[in-house]
Length: 244
Image (tube, rainbow, N blue to C red):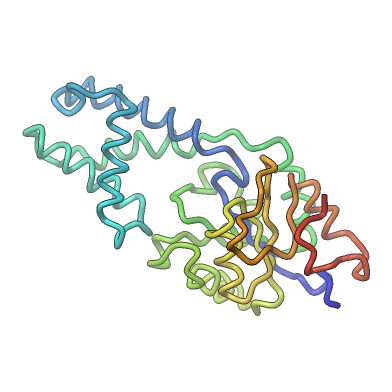
């Protein structure tokens, strides 16, 4: 029976793992909408922040081959809006900068900073995200030794390339890495495909999808993750679907 004592690297998903992403994106879209309305009113005419966001999602969903690079996709959408409204598309970089600043203004879950600080003293931590959050802007670089996102890799979780890229950056083996994230497919399935053990962070106590292989463990907050890691090796059952 193998415990977690051999773990040397812990990778963390970001959105909905370290902070709630929906209120962040809602605010970022609202601020961007106001910016566009003041400078390019033909773009926002007939729209609300919500309907413009929905149009953006439809635009992205129609381009699944580009879904790994959300930054480029949003810039392309902004240029598309500009052309539709009869504007030159040279405003897209400035508009995206407005959105990006708000997108990286997040409220960490209460357990995040204390746990990251504690784990960073013992493990090498790496951020691993399909999104375009910037740990430098958010102020988390002191905890993480590396940051990998899908735009850089050219593929998004659950593609194992994301995990392979993190391991390559750190010169680590898959068996030495544990991934922590909120999404059953992106995080747990992706880690499993890469030969990496995964802990499912289930903050909302939802049921595990029955069609997927369970994670090595699940926790309802990051304090429980610390407790899991600090258990004596003989007490850790990697096959156990839950610790609560």
